[in-house]
Amino acid sequence: MYFFVDAVHGVKMSHVQWFIHALGEDSALKYEEGEFFGRCGLRAEQQALASVQQVHGGLFRSGEEFHIGDFAYILPALEANEQHCLLLAQILQVDWECHCLHVRYWERQGIADTSTRTDTVDIARLDGKFFVRAVPAGNGWSPG
Image 1 (cartoon, rainbow, N blue to C red):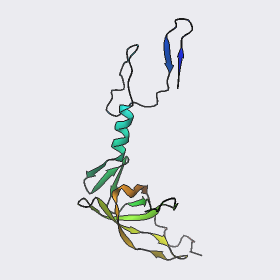
Image 2: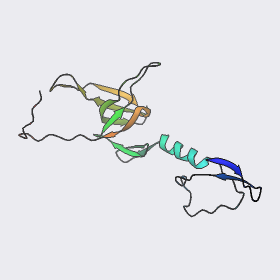
Image 3: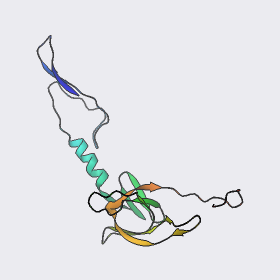
Image 4: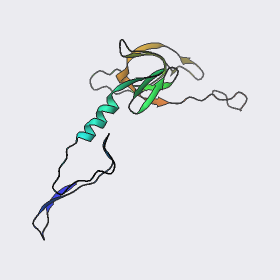
């Protein structure tokens, strides 16, 4: 957090705040006096989160598993300085040849209507998972 010189001993010191151990490090690591280390662990963690790994029936990205049928947030394809909401989609297929997903967007058109247009998007636009729950019939709720 900051560097200082110990007034009693005249030694250069630093005050740090340690949040987590970096990927692949033993949590019982001991550091000797005067030993310095870089941001290698942070860099490794960022690379691991950005990487995409194939898992049975889907993929692993940003610390989450995604499978066919899952609902996901998709980053919109933006022009410079545009801002849009995340898109809501269901994963239909994972295509490793083009590193892309075939998705069905879920967009509200009216009170009870939804659009179900499909698209192919780069896996890099995948931004998280959400869950959908059916509303049981006869619970007193009606659209509009």
